[in-house]
Image (cartoon, rainbow, N blue to C red):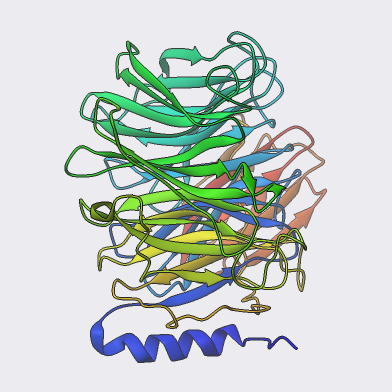
Amino acid sequence: MKKRINLTLLIVILLSINSFAQNIHFIKSYGNSGYDYGRDIKQDLDTGYIATGSSSSFSSGTADAFLLKVDSLGNFKWSYNYGGQGTDWGESVVITNDSSYAIGGYTNSVGAGGFDFYLVRADKDGTPLWEKTYGGSDWDRAHSIIQLADSGFVLVGDTYSYGNGNADIYIVRTDKDGDTLWTTTYGGTENDFGNAVILDGDSLVIAGGTESFGNGMSDGIILKYHIDGTFGWSKVVGENKEDYFTSIAISDAQKYLLGGSKDYGHYMDCDCGQNFWLYETDELGNLIIDGGWQGENIGTEIVYDVVFQTNIAYIFGGITSSWGTASSQSGDEDLYLGKKLSANGNQFYSPFTEVFGHNESDELLAIDLTYDNGIIGIGNLNYKSTGGASLIIVKVKENNTPGNIVVQNDLELENITLSYQELITNPTLKIYPTLFTNSITLEELPGKNTIKIYSNTGKLVFTSVNEKLNSLDLSYFSNGLYIINIQTEKHSFSHKIIKN
């Protein structure tokens, strides 16, 4: 019989244990009535965390991209949705040079057709500043974004619109306003994917997978470009099965660490299963370590993200069906965190090893090193008490050892909503004054509309449907910041207003 954990109680206990060491250690899940997925997380400048993903709980279409802000203890602070009537995903988030945010992902709400690369700039409170799309008439999806020293951006993913056939690796560089400086593709006649990008001086280093080149069904690929788009070198590694890279990190010693998954080949008379794969090179692509690690049982082990903790130690996060509540027989996976020392060659050293999850498929998709030298991670729980799925954030302290967090079965959901505000705007609509005392005026508002006003915590405080209102009496509002959202048949418009 599996024990249901009271997650709120578990968080209190863990924080109490670690309070003397000033190391924060928690697990929290976030979601509402729909499908809410986490894709990336970063330690923010205020010691809190900023995350992105996609949510259908408050979407005007199928799903919206979002930013989620939590404090250092994982407590919900705010969230903001971006997108339109289609499907919008936030795949990667960066804290920008001016201490605000940018999301890279993909959308079919706007753009040239199919899916397009999607870049959203937001201020430090999540309020959208602008959005841009890049791509052609077919599917184009960005999976990773970085910002350069000139405040421009580089997005990397895959494209079916351009290149040599099927999917090709697609790289887009923009200026600080999101305007395209250059684009390029890399690939052959089969499917080729760009999954992650890092900046190394004046070079871009890209990790992904290729079916066009190499030794088997797919292989890991590393590409290096100058930031002006000039090609540097490529390296393809793998064997004769399914091998690919999902992530890349760089150390202070200019070493590249790539994470991914590598096929077992024939294992115990079974042609099945995937390994954790960690691959380390120097800045010229010369091999330092090629480390594969299979689980305790035949199953699926995938590294989805890697970070250097020191020049010889790194943390990797992903999924496993060999430990925890999951199994290859059930087709389920659990979240996994592990530690590796470069000095140990291909041998794994795992004092950091942790497994999290419940009795269905769960995944850990991104990790980041925190200010206290711990790890923050984000992933997803296939938890159905309030919706189809919920995202999970895990914080593990630096000196964690196995057993500080045991395998979690049937994690109980904290029902923390992702508040709803839209990005796609109607440029003709005017709202004034934005700093008001008693009322606001709406100009050029069509007759068929829905007006909603949210507090700065995401609480819905005003709704009006299908009324042609020119003035709203908001004298009864408390002083503070609000978001007004107006949806028409063709547009959705959001704006900050402040009651003074």
